[in-house]
Amino acid sequence: MPEGRNRAFVIAVDGPAASGKGTLARRLAAHLGYAYLDTGLIYRAVGLALMRKNMVRADPGAALQAARALSLDDLDDPELRGDDVAGMASQVAALPEVRAALIDYQRRFAQHPPGKAKGVILDGRDIGTVICPDADAKIFVEASVDTRANRRVKELRERGVTAIYARVLEDMKERDARDRSRSVAPMVPADDAHSLDTTNLDAEAAFQEALEFITSQNMSDA
Ligand code: CDP
Image 1 (tube, rainbow, N blue to C red):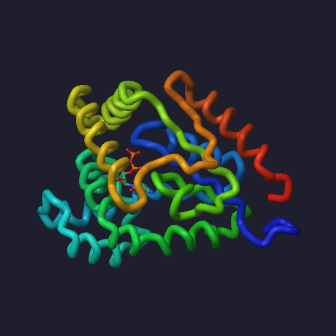
Image 2 (tube, rainbow, N blue to C red):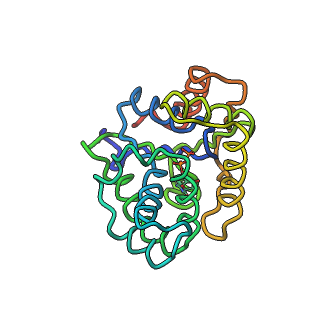
């Protein structure tokens, strides 16, 4: 921890599916030497646990049990990246009891980053509004839904998964609508978030804009 500061510098990166927030957050973390947590993986892990029990709808009791049983090792499973898992993740993520069970884990990570990193980056939907409302820098990453669906199709095909654009677009719209309209921790930009639209920005340009914003946020003592 740097002198004069007794807590980690916290960066919250939120935004909808395939907006580029994961790529951005990972790159910022590597550049700054900060710890990184992809909070989407946590909800995906709970969703995948239910799918492995052959559930197609998220049963609240089973989802809460899976959330409580979650371990760090569960976040390394390559199957978490599937789009079917994303759909189930957004169902479990709408359950207030599941979200409540996962708050402490995320806050602990932010307050005590692994490896005593001097800063931490969390990406998700509610980091700047609910998990870390006092974050030092908040960024809300957006992009048009067509751009995002195209990115997701490309990403899936690069992983060797067959992906049909119209289907991916439809799934994404459905998931965004559920994430935006749920009663608990809906996906909305925090009032003090810097809005970053990546529709016409490549990864490098998005990184530069984000870094410029972050370094303007009292980073001198971090
Ligand atoms: O990678 P992508 O942006 O498509 O999704 P993700 O970040 O892995 O998140 C999967 C789902 O988990 C989202 O659609 C949300 O429903 C949920 N989620 C959430 O509710 N809160 C978070 N902090 C992160 C994810």
